[in-house]
Length: 118
Image 1 (spheres, helix red, strand yellow):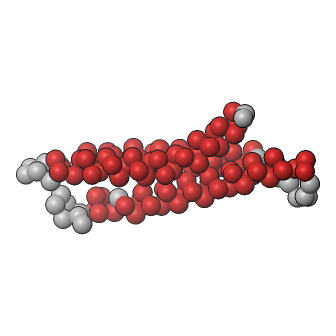
Image 2 (cartoon, rainbow, N blue to C red):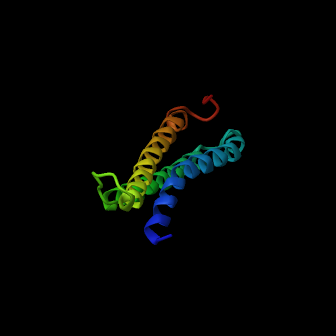
Image 3 (tube, helix red, strand yellow):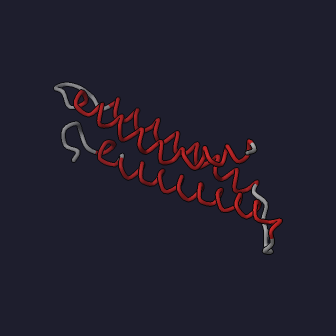
């Protein structure tokens, strides 16, 4: 396994990991944020960190997709190149989908005051 393959696998895992980490952090930080007189800064910080990790995964995936060789013809010699291209494309799609999920999940945190989000 080459370093390029490892980076593509990392990019594939970063998007869902960012979403899951942000979800766990928000569950842990919600009760203190709703205490009397508290702000939602910790929840917003958790969202920004998760979004940054998700965007980093998308950037790595896009770079891997651009570097992946383009293969037009079928053949046993092109199998690894096709696999690299498919894996990079899957990483781009999954990372961008997770960034959209993170953004949609943060709308109540960014718009509503403490105690009013669902």
